[in-house]
Image 1 (cartoon, rainbow, N blue to C red):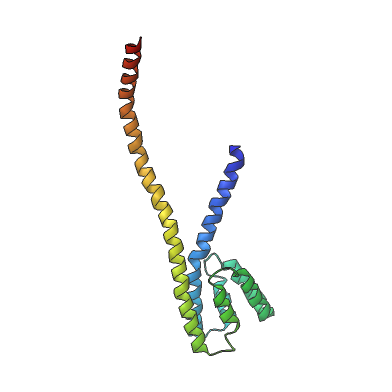
Image 2: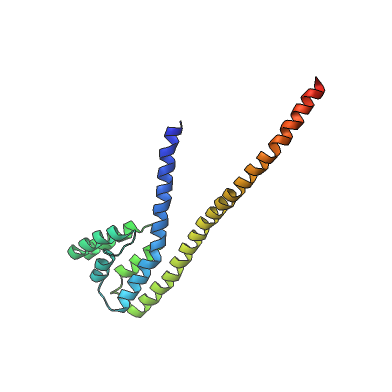
Length: 168
């Protein structure tokens, strides 16, 4: 039964680490996009640069870049699907409509989105740090508990032997 649980636990740990990497990289992506748009770079260049940036989303943007070269709408649909349940989905929507609205207004919305994404990543990190803190506190207390048990073991043994000799 232990052999069945170990692979599940291993996969859960790997999945959590991967999720952490994805959430950790969202503010970096948002900031990169904002800076590139301020530098008046086209979306094609932004996707190209993000496809070589060492983040958890490197492959996603590599695919988006190849799709954008062929058909920009297909690339935006792909990115919308990839970031469907994240705080980054608003950014993709703004990028897909970037040419339709005021650039200044779009930049303001993206910068506000950066704050929101940072807050989300910070809350997620605090939650993870809280669990790590609890585990570290327990690991500090465990040796202390072991020393206490080892210290009381002779006293308990003496008490039990005296009790048994008294009952005989």
